[in-house]
Image (cartoon, rainbow, N blue to C red; front, side, top):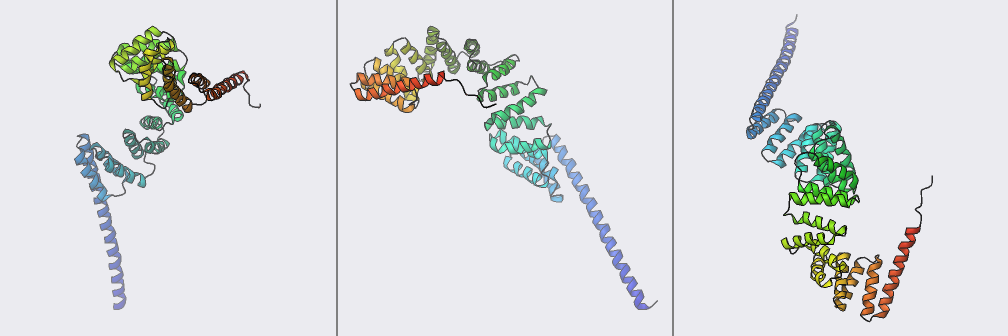
Length: 389
């Protein structure tokens, strides 16, 4: 073997041994890094168990120095930050986790839940939908999604999500209340009343729940039952002018005027500026042909609700009945401008204009009232058209 050949073999062997040594050193370094990561994991988890979130945060940051693409570590760092009310940083950490692993249900759920708690419902919905697509059995995510859907007025979808939750938890008070709210907003009053009856059969009945039950029953044309529900509501919270007004309104609606006057007067005794009670009581006095008592109440109501047909119309009638023709005409004109489709508005304005000596305008208003009245009668007589079969 020549000296040159021996040198060549010796150099090649050295190169092979050098590469092997480098690989060996890399493996040792990787193994050490893994052990370090595991050590920080254990420390972080031990701090979490003690609710020492600042220390846990430090350990998770150490993990991420060694393993910056560890999605689980980013998720846990977000939790530690959130526990310290560092919400912006927490969401940023969870966003990092999702960028690394888009199917990470925990990080998606956490962002959605934070947005719900901040009442940023529109931002919460897509994260919670994604979380449920990955983990459809996550009831916490489904509950948060239902809240977010109600918050964004997507009531039909919210009702479907709540119904799924109620199948497994039929006596969950919060779910029943959320279901009732969603159904009420859809004007599905009969279903809402059924749900609220189930809720009221549980513990912790409240005045608010009885009042809501009353509203659902009234919306379902069960006003007599609604009255009983509102009586229960007032009994539980007698100082609430809102609930007492509801009771007075139902008495008024059922033509039980003496009881309505008693409740509405009590509301105004407690709060003389309550415009809804003032309007209802003022309208009651108009019905009883006592315009003098009605007038100051209706002035208060019209001042509070100047863009409502009912308040301006009632005030106009009261002014006419108390002899203030000019002001009465102006109020009735204002009412008709707010809603030109109501026949009685044009009729009362026409009569007021006749009294004011404005015959031409009065004739136009009375003719318009007749047209609207006849149109309504015609539409009521026509059979409803069915779609082709």
